[in-house]
Length: 593
Image (cartoon, rainbow, N blue to C red):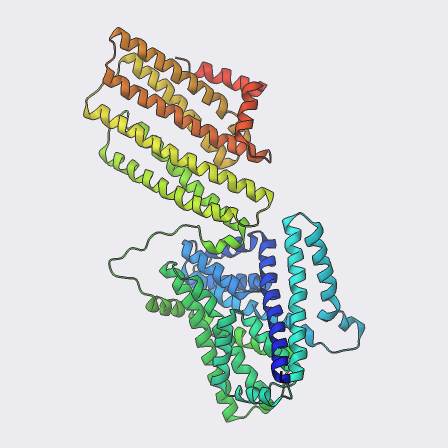
């Protein structure tokens, strides 16, 4: 095997370590944030100033800060695409964040540049990765082996990944030193001095590995050997910025048109910025001639050029954010007579940060809960006065509730497959339970509506006693609905504790009403036809109360750090508490026939 091939294989090994370490470090940092970074990014959707430049400036600062923390502009951009796709952020608001992400990613190269520090001073040596990386690796391994808390394990992953990243960079650098004097390598480095070829190589290679920092890390490793000059490095740096757009373009496949426009803004920003920078730079070089172009550069120089480019491009294009948005709108046009399917806050891009994804699920579930409650209230109102339009609305809302359950259920199941801590797991289980109850409440609302329709169409009329009994039970039903939904929205366990006693009262009411109805039938005071409607109504009332009980018990169980609703209810029935007995007496008296 030739020395070049052998050295190239070792170089590829170093590249693999670098890519793996970079990816895992970014993932660990995102996990450690627990969704906090996404919430900060979400706040970019609001600004007190009405001038768009201030909104873009705020977004730029946030995008820069978040990217610096997670060490991945691709992650920030993909999150932004997710926010736009979910409708939480407008395209114009995403422009600033994308620009900020490009500035934030420059921090990665400054960290990688630490591998090029050369000094015998002890305090300078402390900053060399070869000094502190082994320490971080040992700490990280210890956290992974001996810690059970997810946050500490994520920190361990981050430390170990950083050490692997630095080892990969060191391996590439050592290999590049061996290849620097190889004739084949020299020919490759010479060819890269062509600006257009260098730009193309940087863009294509970054597009393949989907990590601009890794591409530029390779350039830094080459720079440490003195084998690469400014004229070869600058086009590759600009090309890497264009190539990193591939990740965002891939992430928007199947997303809304606005999400696709967001990815296009990212692409246009880097293309226009690169072309503008190259035009000005090479024009000045042709006019006055830069003496450093043929000189070798070091790792810190690569980081500096990358920073200068991104800051310059942002300064140029930030005031033109509206133009970029219009250009993206022109590229991804609305289809005539085509209404885009409404998107929800449930975006697959958020699954990598479960804490934030769970919050999004909670927000959507709240919307579902409000819809279920409104649907039931509307159905009950039809018993007093029939309304065709309201009946159509109830039917439509019930279909919406079905879709809510389908989308939320699918998303929550996928979320439960992620690495969740105990608290996140309980919250996910609670949401999976309650969405079924909300959907079933919608079904019973439709059943109540069907009974109201039958009463109207057949011109049926209940006896005075039957009407009074239904009023008592419907009042109890409204009370338990308010209690259970209030406890869910406020997470108030004291309210939830009042639900089960009332549910028992409603069970007793159903039994009593059914017995009284049979007596009226025997006396001929009620018809068989009315009897079926009466029984359907009280059965649906009771089943709604069952689901209200489920909602409250789920909350109680989550608050007590376990999730076994059957055990809780059985224990409560076998040994009722004083609080339960007091509430039972109160509701028994209040809803007495």
